[in-house]
Image (tube, rainbow, N blue to C red; front, side, top):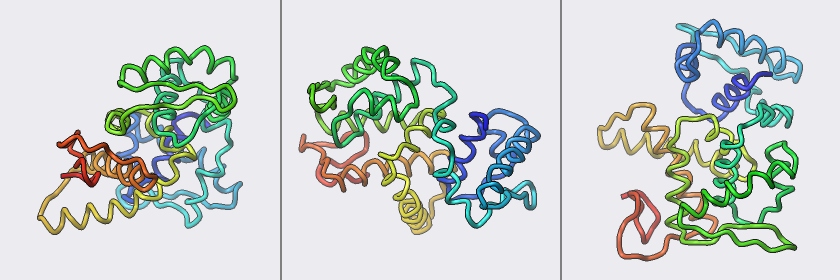
Length: 248
């Protein structure tokens, strides 16, 4: 399975809105014929796993089989990260992983998540730390436990919000990590709430800002739930209310 096909599975798995041939083609910058070929290849995998075929409806609408919710978890681990990320991508993803983490991480654990060797992560470590330091945060190392990021929650959220604002595959890979399962689960609920508020206020949001707002809210809700509260600095930060952690 090629890299784009893996990303197609991730996008179809995380979206509550319908995708079409044209919208996927626009997202990946390829032709509709290429997307058809990707889905043809994907269907072989889905049928083999007993899930069923993706079919095309009116105007190229993509119709998912009933069991598609299992597709992402059935992807071979080597396929999820096997399209070897560049060193720069690993450093960026590594920084986001550590900044968003609840606990310490050993280099071996990071390497396992990225399907690379521990030596590869060790080579990337200075670049990962550089990104964390540029965000105004510190890296704490303990021989028996690994490494973690220390610093203000406002700075951590700022980094993560900027990170998910990118339109890049690396963001989808970060969201696909098991650590971010809560964010993925919150997506459906938050989209319903956001849709309801837009309807109540008579506001229409284009898809791109709607998806971005959903990601931002998911990060804030999940971090609040896990006890990562914003410090009280008497103001707002990137549109987040200091007292409640909600959007103003």
